[in-house]
Length: 144
Image 1 (cartoon, rainbow, N blue to C red):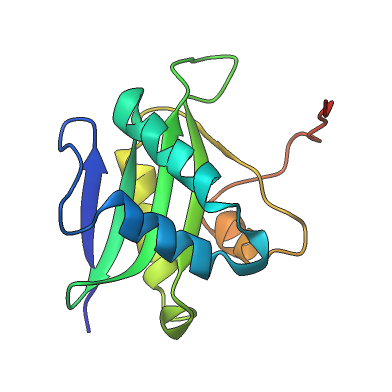
Image 2: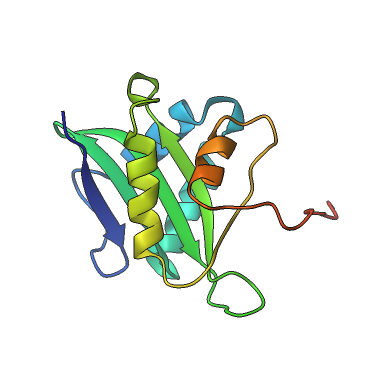
């Protein structure tokens, strides 16, 4: 079984087969405890279509088995140029290297640095560390 990457960005436009709705539903299901409401996931996709970044799908036999969404910040030097907003894998394909392959392909597509937010107990943290991500900063937020 081989995974094929499928890129969706501003240049490729929206995809009829792998629609926003299909991507949102996949992420909403497979992000599990680390997910967001569908409206927020759709806003992230809208950002890709309107401002920059990309969606990288992992496809096996026409089925989505994984999704990575990167938003471009439009900044450089002082803010990473890319933000990894979402990565999720179908449970049936976890632990088989597909997530690492998908994320490695996403990293190759990025121009510049990549930032992400991960909760300390999220198992994906180990994948990020294997791929070279490190925790240099403590994130602080003022919520209003």
